[in-house]
Length: 215
Image (cartoon, rainbow, N blue to C red; front, side, top):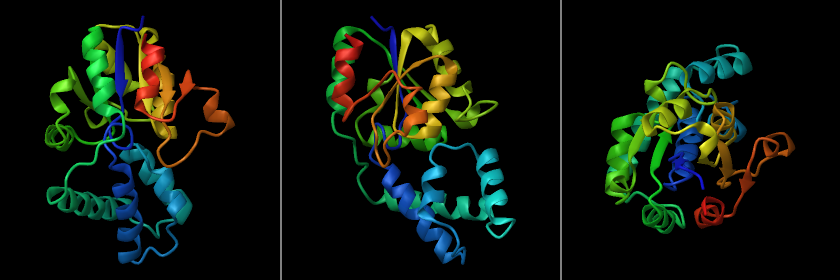
């Protein structure tokens, strides 16, 4: 039996990745970055700030100011979520209840900042279901590097190979896999390609699909 389950947040536990994607694209257009594409938005999922800046600088040779765009997206998403309910992914409550019944600890390993993550999980009624909430912003390197998941395993006192990590995006999958976790992907906006599939322990349609693997 696995000893812990680690969850990404946006697009995995909360159905908020779509909101971020909408603001990434909309804010880019509002700032005049008309070359910025929806594929750029997808590539930014869970990507740490340093690598995100390098990615956009390389692609657009300075024509897109990553930090200006990131700040606009952060403000836009916050303002939106401050006045809307936090949407929860199908199966989230069921799988967390099952883990609690089985006595298996759970943690959130988010690419977002800690305080907003905890506040949004609380509003969604999910915060108390987790033993820890880990922010990649507090690590030496964020996703797709292994640091966030290695730190979560250390906090829980478990070896990565004894955990399941649940992710929805390529950068998140790479982070968990490089840490040595058994990664189950629950696709949100994109399916795993052949290369990403090689890193997966399993791919399931929704969160309840991980329960048979935990057992």
